[in-house]
Length: 156
Image (cartoon, rainbow, N blue to C red; front, side, top):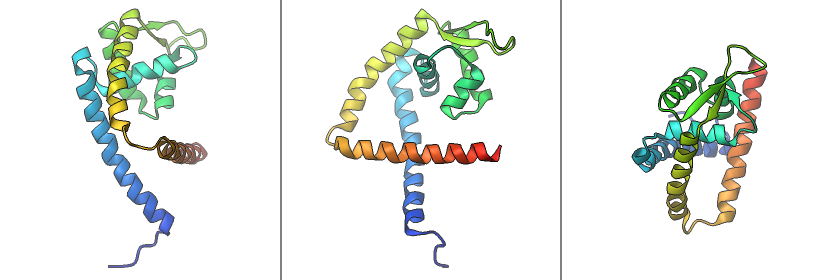
């Protein structure tokens, strides 16, 4: 078997990426279970969160960009949320066709209920993990995301 062409840091990052892929799958499954009783999925919850945390109402394309997701997938989920009365569309003064997505009162209640379920779950999951280590992992993941976003932007 040929020797790896990766540097030690490249090998370490490759191992981390594989674990992150597995972790992402497990987190999505756990999130689905956590919010199922609310009629949500991890994907729907994630989009509600993006709407809540946005500085102002945004069109689907901007929500997708902020989530690092495919616009068509986000549009499909937003349409489902709209059909269930969790989001509404408002006119966009900057673009006639790209309506703004806003949370309804029902959507706010669903998001708040999901977050109420999330708090004890995440507290239990993080129990015994040093906060400093979690902050370090967060900084590294954020730095990698920034590098990848910069790389993607330079290719377009």
